[in-house]
Length: 275
Image (cartoon, rainbow, N blue to C red; front, side):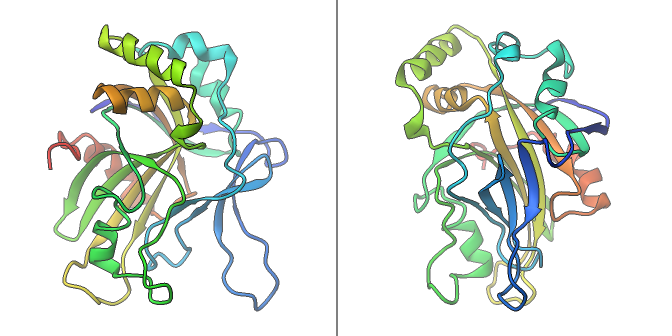
């Protein structure tokens, strides 16, 4: 469910001061294409989909993804659901962690489902393989090196499908069990807490049809900044959680028309639980 969609706004700090940055890997000339990266405190945290747009959609956890980015100053506001996008200055607080750029805020209600690589519901082992096939060198599916949450999907049109993911900065096994249980109890009492993420939209499509299931994959990825215990609790209890998404325009493999279509697509009343 989409609760609110905000106007485009400028957020972020100078690249030298931002804790998160979208960047290209520095490589020597002739050593192969540079990877797209999400870096945290100057260290590569996630490898993102290849620049070409014809390679498979990807988020892959790297060594730099070793901490969450919770902010004590807004924890009280996030314990329950936000009524408005600008409640308590949450956007500005987390916006200061991001690189300078244009962002569209989304306030969503999601019902996360925790997925591990290789499981029955793993996107990389099933939907992606059906379109791209196995990796031609390794003979295996892409491997994200992290459990993640699936929350929503919907057809774009006859040529594409939108898949949504919430990706934790640290795996759920790092979460404190007592805090997860506390949130489960709160959710059982009707509380809907709020998590925060920076998000990207990648639209990927194979250059050549090698399978019978050829279509565009729209990958909407929410990299979790705050709310790791909340997401696990919601997945455990089968309860909803709010997600404040700060979509980074210009940092994904999508164009203006695709960004413009996203609010209406995300508002479709369908999720992975319905399909």
